[in-house]
Each structure stands twice: as structure tokens, then as C-alpha cells.
Amino acid sequence: MKGGMVRGRSLSPASSRIAAWIAGALAVLCLALVNVGVYTYRIDFYFTGILVVVMINIILAVSLNLINGFTGQFSLGHAGFMAVGAYASALLTIYMEWPFPVVLIGAGIISALIGFLIGLPTLRLRGDYLAIATLGFGEIVRVVILNLKITGGPRGLGGIAPKTTFFIAEIVAILTVIIFSNIVKSSHGRAFVAIREDEIAAEAMGIDTTKYKVLAFSIGAAFAGIAGALFAHHQMFIDPRSFTFTRSIEILVMVVLGGLGSISGSIVAATVLTILPEALRGIAQYRMIAYALLLIGLMLIRPQGLFGTKEIGDLFRLGQRQGNEGRRAQADGGEGQ
Amino acid sequence: MTMLEARNLTMQFGGLTAVSQFNLTLSQGDIVGLIGPNGAGKTTVFNCLTGMYVPTSGEIHVLGKRVDGLSPHQITRLGMARTFQNIRLFKDLTVFDNIRIAFHYQAQYNLASAILRLPTFRREEQSISEKTNALLEIFGLYDHRHEIASSLPYGDQRRLEIARALAANPKILLLDEPAAGMNPYETQELTTLIQWVKDEFELTVFLIEHDMRLVMGLCQRILVLDYGVTIAEGTPREIQSNAVVVQAYLGEEAL
Image 1 (cartoon, rainbow over the protein chains, first blue to last red):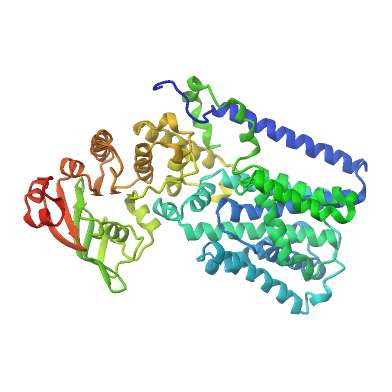
Image 2: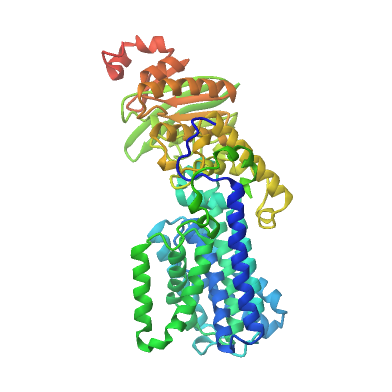
């Protein structure tokens, strides 16, 4: 121990692990209460429907965050991948009559493949150019769906079995959050972040930046596809208007508001932004204005988003920046986990 | 054993020849300096060697393997790491994470074991953390490891960048102006550090530097570049007394 002075924020991993446990316990408690509400019918059918949409939006926001937030590749095509998953799953259910879990996985794989094919050429572009290219991709998907016979064209596709229960949506959302948290807290996750921070340096450190950009894009697309499948089997009817550019923007707003590079942020923002318009129904025609003002206000106060790049567990640490100098040395090993 | 070899390396940007017919042979344990006035093409040589640029003509061999045309990450994986003239740290990440990222390609687990948190994942992450801490200790950055990289003093950032390059497990280390912006005391410390690191990690070092005390004190051989052409090559003593070099670059007071 040289000098004995602690600069900046340093903290023993032991207490950060406790903080993460507290955050996790709180999340589990909230979710348990919601579940009790749903299964005892204290939460009505209508609001349960909104909760399903919350879960779907969490999946969309978390998966887009991997691309836009962690890897720093500005994609505006998420509604396109969602549409691919929605239509693919609906067709699999209607024509193949596969069981729902298999349909979900199938939708994920198909979207991932499309993501891979789109990512390979477009990820050579940077910043604004990538945004425009992915925007174009989303529109192409919509136009293709609009003109195919099998998708029902502009009339849409109806008669999809209502297989998305709150339980299924919840399970898939939880799995998504676990998968993405585990990815970003690994060497692979650090490769994504390195690309966001400095692509040239990342490449010089032996990271295959092309591979990892395409990987982020494919994983993000896969889960957007799964979200689309849940959406299709929740609405029971889909048409191209559900997957316009506006939808991509909605998801993007959740990611930016929650914090680019924070999974907790995406979860909170997706929840708040889905429930808020409903909660504001009381003020009828002014609700969209209130919604917009809230967004502008938040962006002015916290341009980095609610959470920045931090997670819930990190926020609990803020109070105890100092100290723990003596204990740090022994406690180090666990930092990877 | 020949670690790094460049044969007739030429780099043209449109009509401009930035580097012309550059030749270099580094043997195991060499420490060679590349000097020259601003705009002489030194960093271009580095960028060609590390795969950032694809040379217009010529060949580059790293550990006997031809690498021109390979991408930078492939060359790094073969055993050649570098630092940058204008410090390219992952600025908003912690000191600890800056080093950890460089262990990426050595991490022996795939995405599935990361998602499922398999024992391989835990073991590898544990070992990465340990190796990272060991490097931070060596470079005296251990107490700063939870700080954001850009908050470090300039000299520490330079040292962190060298530490990060070492984490990529190189056999050849390329340093682009490691002492830039350092005061004489820091430069002296850095000179000792480079020498020590070279011996400790059994490295072969190729460096660009403007600080003559560092170059003359450290390098066994020096190459002088002017307008992309190698105008001299030799020991520090020979270079110091070379009339062409003195005229092109060193000036009166260096003698």
C-alpha cells in the first residue's frame, strides 16, 4: 500500500457484490408483487396486457442497447428485425403449428440470420451512415411485407393464436436480461465496449472488430425477433404499420433515456415509457405533450440517460467511495464475476 | 532469430510517397530507434508494420510469417503490440478494464460459457484479473486501478498504454513516441522502465522518439528517416557524428 490515499472511486469488490445482491433482491421483490397481482386478478386483464408489452419492450430495449449502447454502432433498424420475428413466428404457428417455445427460438434464429446478412456489409459504415443504412433496411422489410402474399400485405396477418401469456413474456424477458448481463460482463462484452470506446485501439489489442460488430448486430437482431414473436402472439394480429420507423425510434428513446451501455437503465426506461402513456390517460389529449416534455426535460438534466453506463448495483456504491483501502488487496480475485 | 523484418517497404498516398524502400531487421532482444524530423514518415512505418495501412509495395514478416495485408488484430495475435503517438486509451473505462480488454484474445472461453457462467469462464476471468493486477503492480498503477483512464496524469496514461500493450502478450513491442510530453525526470524513469520491461518480458523493441536522451540511452541501433527515405543507420555514436543526419535533423545542440 503506497501512500495510503484513495483517489476517485475505489471500493472493495465484496461490498459491490453486496450492493448487486440488494439491487437484485429489490428487483425480484417488485416482480414477485406484480406476479401476485396478476395471478390473484388484483391487476385487471387490461393492465396485464400492458405488462406483457412492458416485457416485450424490455427485450427490445436491452437487445438494442447491446448494438447502440455497448458496441456504439448506431442502428435504427430494430423494428425491421422485430417485424421479421413477428411474421416468421406467426407463419410458423399458423402453417407449421410448432409449439410456442420452438417458434420463439425459430423467430430468433431467422432474425439473427437476417441481422448477420445485413450487418456484414453495413457495419463497414460508421455513425450517421450506418444509421441511414439500417433505417433503409427497416423500410425494406416493411415494404417487402407489404407486397408479399403470404404476409397478407397491407391487410395484415390475423388469427394468430394468443400464446403470449404474462408468464411466458416475463420468463423470456428475465432470460434476456440474464443473457445480456452475462455477455457484457465477460471478455466478449469488453470487446464490444472496446469497439465503442476506440475502434482502432481495440483492433490493435487483438480484437476482431468486424466479427464483434456483426456478432452484436446478430445477437441484438435475434432478441428483437423473439420480442416480435411475443408481440405477434400477444396482439393476435399484425400488419406492417406495427413496424414502422416510429417503432425503431421508440425503442431507441428507451435505450438513450435509460443510458447507452446500461442494462438496468434500459429495463427502467422501457417500463416507465410503456406505462407512462397509460398513466397519463387522465389528461387525455395533452398526454403526448406531457410525454414529450418529460423526455426533453430528462435529456436536458441527464444527457447521459438515467443510468449513464452504470448498472443498478453501481448506484448503491456511490455513498461509500472512500475507505476500504486495507481490505482491497485480498479481495481482488473476484472482480471478473 | 529474426523477429521482425521489412523489405523494400513503400507506402504511397496518391502521388505522395510517405515511405520509400524502407528496410528493417530486428533480432531477438534488439532495441532499435526510429528518428527523423516531423513528417518524415515514422508513424507511417509503424502503421504499415502493424497492419493499419496496407503498404503499396514491399514485404513484412513477423516471426517468419508474412503479414502485409493482414488486419491489425491478426498481427497483434502473432505477437506484436504497439502504443500510439497520441495515446489511444479507452478513455472512459477504468485503468483496470483498459488492461483487461487487452487480455481478450487470450481468454479461452466462448460466448456460451460466458452466458452460462461455466467453470471455464470463472477460471479464465480469475486468471485475467490476477494477470491484470500483476501488470498494474509492475507499472505502479495498482492504486489507481478503479479510476477512469482519462483522469490519470499524462505520464501515467503513457505508462498505462505500455502496460496495456504488454497485456496483449507481445514478443515485439512498438512504441510511438513513448516520452512525448514527459518532463526530464519522467523520461528518465521511462527509459529505465522500458529497459527493465524489455529484459523482464524478453521483448524486442522498436521505438519512435524525439527525445534524444531516451533514444541515445536506450537504443543499440538507430534508423534515421527523412522525407520517407532512410538516410542513415547505425549505433547512437555513429548517428550523432553523421553529417547528413546532423544536417537533416539533430541540429547543433544535440552534438
